[in-house]
Image (cartoon, rainbow, N blue to C red; front, side, top):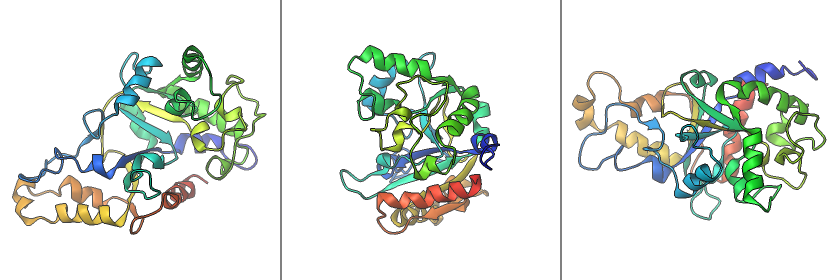
Length: 277
């Protein structure tokens, strides 16, 4: 406990959040035009929704693919809107998924207290000149999946005495935490949450619906899903049970409205905060 907040409870319950662009979500393999939809739900991984070449390069350079290549990236409790952005506009066209912490029990992986891609690309400070220094900082701050929540608890308590500031504020630059002095969370030049939000990487594919707490998408995405889920000619293919599309629609979700602005993702994060605080 601290300042009236149970940091251990918050750290143990903060969900893993990932964002998928609508373009990648509605892939030809999962939503074929000339045959019935697959019976089983897809798994989050390299095969689907995929991984960019730029991400692969960063993984290789920073040794994030040792011993295993990450299948999927998540943020601790935050929605990374950039993956759902429509081109260079402010419109959000992606789908956001929040998962129960219990899913980590069936995975291996690792975590860092910042976005590794943004550090590598010098988007967040410290904008280290030498690539070797970037790699060193990532290696020094990487923790195994089974230990990251314990580290996150200490990080949250030190940098965010009021843990709501993890969402709506900034970290304390003078926080007394075990991490290195050049940790992005300590640099006051960083204004974007990528600098202090924990990145969690799972090394195995994860079933889309397993452990799903909440998801959100724009109205047009909900409409498109409904059109697939209501096709009568697919009922015999799916059998007696509901399709994975129907089960997704039955899960707790938020309709972000028509062509939402990226800021509308705050509605999603507010719902997460209600469960934490």
